Length: 115
Image (cartoon, rainbow, N blue to C red; front, top):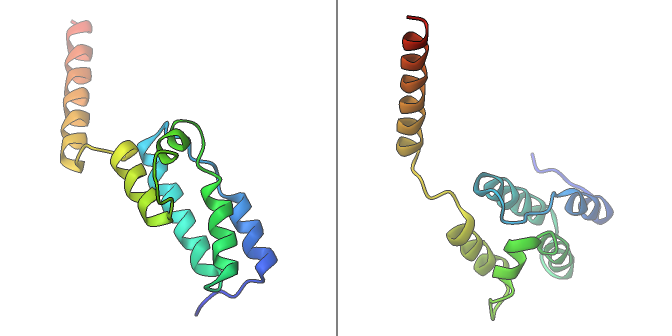
C-alpha cells in the first residue's frame, strides 16, 4: 500500500533530511536513500522538482564544492559524482579482514600483557 502525504507533509519530510557534507562515505548512502524515498512521495512535475531542489540544497561542505563543478546538476549526475567521490571504496570482504586482523591483534596483546 502506497503512502499518501499532502504536499506540505512531503515538504516537511524533505526539510527533515540531514545535510550531507562529504565527511562520511557510509552517511552518503543514507542520504541517497532518504532523498530517493522522499522524491518518490511527490507527484511528478513541479511538485517533485520543488522537493528535489530542497533535497539538493542539503548537499553542503566538501560535497557542495564537488557538485558545483557539474555542468548539468540533475539528481542522477549528482548521485554518481557523490558516490564516485565520497562513496565507500572498500568491499565488505576487505572491511571484514581488517576487523578480523584488529581483533586478532587485540587478543594477542591481551595474552602477552597478562604473562
